[in-house]
Structure formats: C-alpha cells, structure tokens
Image (cartoon, rainbow, N blue to C red; front, side, top):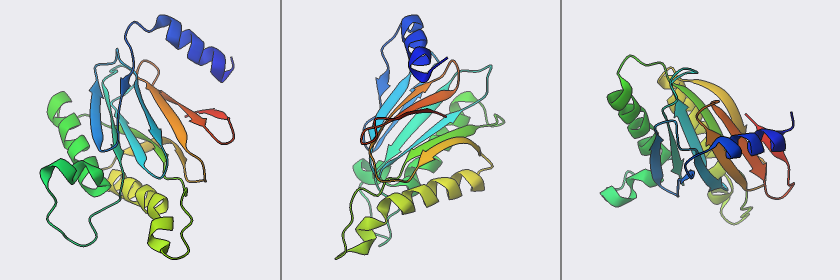
Length: 178
C-alpha cells in the first residue's frame, strides 16, 4: 500500500475534521480527531499512549527556551518548548492517568533561515530538536518516530487510530510515514 493509498483509506473512514494545531498551541484528541499542523523551524511533539488507547496530543512550539531568563507573560509561555513540552506531559498524565506510558513522535526543526550575521537564528531548528529530545528522554518517553532537520517546511497529520504520522515536505514534494 502506498502512502497516498493509506491516507485516502483513512480519509474515507474519518467522520470528523482534523484539529489544526497552530503555533504556540496544544491540542488533545479523543482518538476520533486527527491532529495536523505546518512546520518550519518549529517542532511538533505528538504524545500518545499505546495501540489500544487512541487519546493523544500535539504541541507546536516556536523557540527552544527563554535563554535570557526573562519573565514571560502567560500568553507567550507556549512559544517555548522548555515550557510547553512539560505542560503537555503533565496534562496527558493528569487527564489519562499518572501511570500511563507515553510515546512520542516529533517533526520539524528545519533550518529555513541562514543568517550569517546572526548564527543564533540559523540554529533555532537545531536547538528546537535538542530540547524536544532532551525533555522526552528526561521523562522516559520513547520517541517512536521522527522527521526532523533538513531545510524544508513540512505538513504533519497524526492519525490516532494507527498512531502514525504523515509528513509532507513542501520543497521536495515527498511524503513519509512515521
């Protein structure tokens, strides 16, 4: 079965529209809704429980961390992976049970900006990947799939019924299933 056939089969069975996860956003699905987003240097972290339970969540953050230790207004806290990922983990465990085993898929972290004047900007995608992997590892969450890095923007759709993520690279027009 090709990736396109897989997507068509899932779309034919889907009864509800996918939930779009915007920048600095966190969404939960009861297993009936797919989760989708579009990424550049941002990261999407998808957390799910297992093959039997279809509940899941997706976060979409812009920056790895607040490196200047500035006081961050509440409305801006979800921009940072260092704050959003722990919040996502905490809420998944609060909603579905402290003892659940979580699994993750991550996507994004492209190097879309090549700013020789400001190398920090050029490394945002790389730093976003590092913070996601570090926080997931620190919380004993296995990463079961990833599509990170590179120099292209991506579309991501997560299918809770199969715990699979479809990735579409805009520049190369290639599709991947993780």
